[in-house]
Image (cartoon, rainbow, N blue to C red; front, side, top):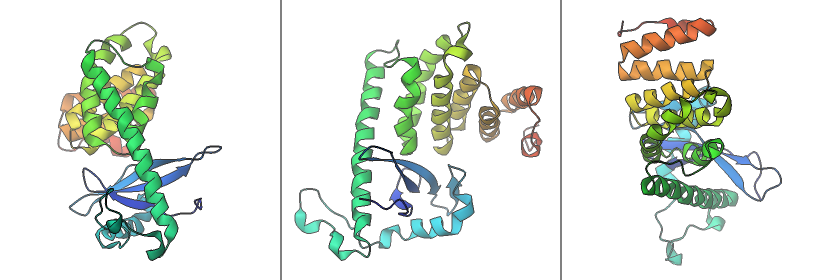
Length: 253
């Protein structure tokens, strides 16, 4: 139904106005959605994808036009007289784009709620195979669910640390590192840098790479943790060339 060139679209999220892109899934009659950036209440565009900064002006304008969009009027699912009409909009497909997003958001929300409930019922176990954890966290990350991301990080960390302390964990549990990186990103976006740092610390333990070390350094800076900042800079420099922006000491040292 959709043209692959449909532009990004805006949805009000937990920390501001989120900008999403639609990603067609080959061979499937559904789409994946991913949050590219968030326009915060103070007018800053936070780039979550590395793709938003280059088009910041256009995405900012799109976010600011959200409240004035005649297609996105307040409505009730049980009141047909209040429903927006595709025939009344400038681009009828935009309504179906939002409907597709709504369906995908609900499916992801159900999966996230189920994961939280499983963690609450059995505090000592992982509800999914460790290799499947990244797949369980990905929808929470893609839809930029900040509160759920923080809740899952707090619930999962006590379970994952003992698992990752086992011999050979780095080779066996690479998927866990990716899951923790996503949770750390959500915590950082939610202005919880200490929780983000805990996620990135453990992600590095599960599988070290320059990107995760960078995230750990950024979280240590945001948390004001000089010791963690020193350790992660040293860990980065021991294996790779430390970029200039990461070498800056700032106010913590």
